[in-house]
Length: 399
Image (cartoon, rainbow, N blue to C red; front, top):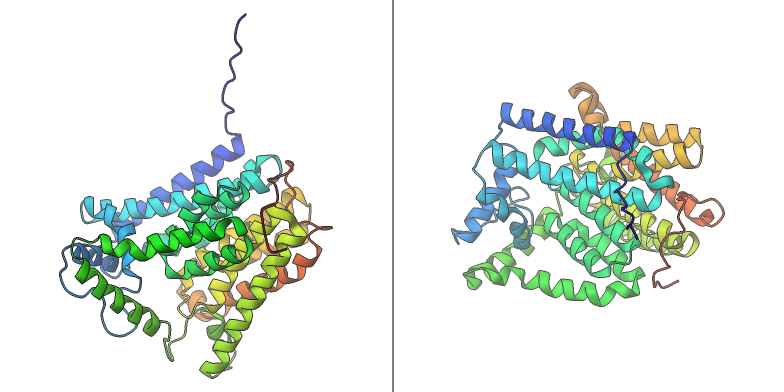
């Protein structure tokens, strides 16, 4: 009997167009890097610090709130790129790595949460995300990589791939310590992840000891903690967070009040994520958890910069596509598109960017978070996401 041959399904035209757009965007970023190698790019801190770390060549941390701001573990993320020639090649490959994480993360989430596999969604999402990604990609910041890792972790939570989700979440901590927010939310709400996250914590804590000079590594470890706590208190310098939003409106709050608001917002974020899992099921619950984490990070990380909003943009873009293709809600589609365009405001010229700095982006994050807070109660009857498949089984939660 002749055996049947099943050919792999070819990408749709919409999906091919989306990947073509990502390729064009990558080429544009590469051209910019070649034309404008700038010592002021953040990679001028990342890679030399990693090289100094492995050579035990003095302290990797400086005084004040500038310089290398991450834990020593993050240097393991930068280390493989030291094998590349210093200059455009290294700079381009580093950024392409971040863009690949982001693009494939978006595609993975859409395959699990969008109708018909999300090919049409992917094209629209790509168009909306690229604008908000441009400044972070040009500068080479790890925000780009963290955004992609959060998306991949969300996809693995949907698939119940607990160990891989654990690896990706702690990989997010390598990119930026603020990934701890997502780790804490997942640990609080997914029983299956708790022991795994603790194992990941032990591995993460022990990572610097793999250094050829453990005494040097431990010394830098202590300095790194001091640097993090110091840089988390930027003083009068204004950033694109909730405090920056208030300052733009002429409101200044004492430090104690700001801390209390951030802690209250953290508790509310946890309760909303829990309610999302209970009312929306595993698919919508994991999605909303990640989206809430992204919004919280933008509003209450005391060092949120304008480039950081690449972490939030994918979630607005995903909802824009879902509103247009799945729910037929053209009004909310326009709202989310406007939100995505607002997150790309750094690309509309310096006058516009300076006029909206500290105001527009955190305002979008705040409105988005409030929208999720309102919508999470009605997820069972009015779902945000409408995939054609039934989705994965419900994960273990506190619900």
